[in-house]
Length: 419
Image 1: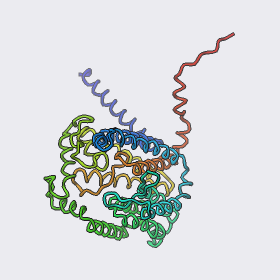
Image 2 (image 1 turned 90 degrees about the vertical axis):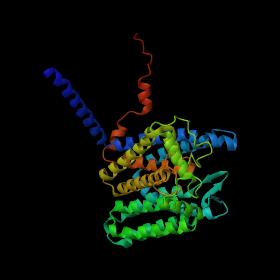
Image 3 (image 1 turned 30 degrees about the horizontal axis):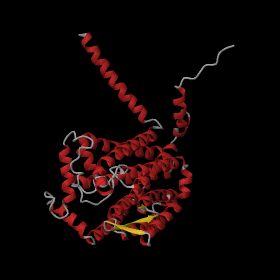
């Protein structure tokens, strides 16, 4: 009887020790830093692989080169990683000083959308084209809004009980001016994300809940205005509200139904990497706003759950920064970036699975799109800078040998002969 119980006790003790070890590692001051770093690296890598798979067919049809979209995305990913590394090394105090200048630059770039260098895309005027490169300024406006809001509200921490100090200058003119310019360009998806960031930053700063009613009313009014002004959006919303999207031939349902076809074809385990059927001219924007449908079709539930899990890890790391940091700016900025990533991911995935009407926002760090990817990676760099500022994190990171030193440590070197 004793011999049959001992292995069970050892297994239970082993499991408890593993769980305890994971808990200790997650409570480490460097845990948020490495969770953000690893999760981002996996999301970007998965995104590049899926962009190559999803865009190869249409890329070949349009340009005769199956790798064109992928190579462009790879170039932006490389540039974004460099900018993320630079952003991670900028001290928190410098980010506070850069906040107003960043928002001013974002507003000026958004104004340039309405100049001769501005361009239209699918009914939205939200791009500028310079020297053959197209840039979407509103994506960088998300970064600027987070940092500006955190800097202003942190400086006014003691007077946030008065709504006038909350509104000026963060909401008026800061956020309102930026959101108004994007609204004028008819980019509903970006407007919703900017409004979510504004509300998230205010919530993290401890603004009283009753004032969010006004923010929600303004957001609803702006969304209704933009929906009514676009026949395409109204078709999609009416089809979504009416629940009539069972046939791709119904107006406003083609993209939604084919996204559901892709997820259904993938089933539990997927068709295998590169095996998508919908990317062969059936599903529009398979490498951009609807890349999650291709992930589900090719990689099945393991692929989709992996994406969700990685976003959860980033959210958990942001939460750890918020509850651990003693710097009010760090806490608000981390919460703002968390709201940015999660709200955008929820709107994108919700549109793909039919939970929301199709709005048109990319999946952060995964979808094709240079401006969105670079801006998101800059946001990740800021998160890493915030994580480095946590008590004990910088000391732990500086005490560890660099990757180059760890690599050279295992390389055999000739020993000096004794004379």
